Image (cartoon, rainbow, N blue to C red; front, side):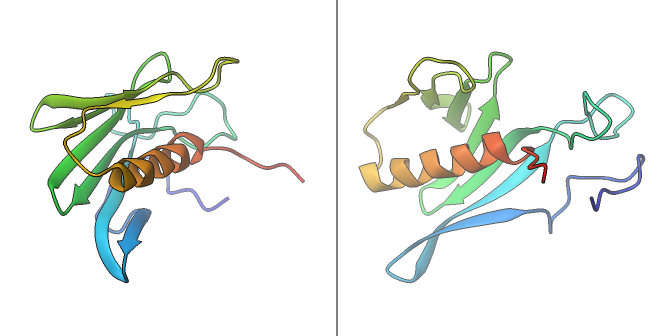
Length: 128
């Protein structure tokens, strides 16, 4: 695996980005932010496991949306400190739901949900 040095930073401008396009025009760009501990190093529970993504900033045509992972592996979506939506916890045997206020078009929310799926599975490892 290509992991930075233990004291290296994971959160930088050129980190992994995801882009949503509509009619060949970018309408949202997501930047992932990895969990770090107080020593400002990556937070990982297992030696071979990459750090978790704990926040994603999504720059949209409507402004900046902040997507944050919760302790129960649910997700909240906020803008300017106001919660606009949430996703029920991942990694359970229950269905996942995206609950949101109808402030933006439903296709944007569908795209945000796909970005959240990517965010929650960014640290998955596939053993061959």
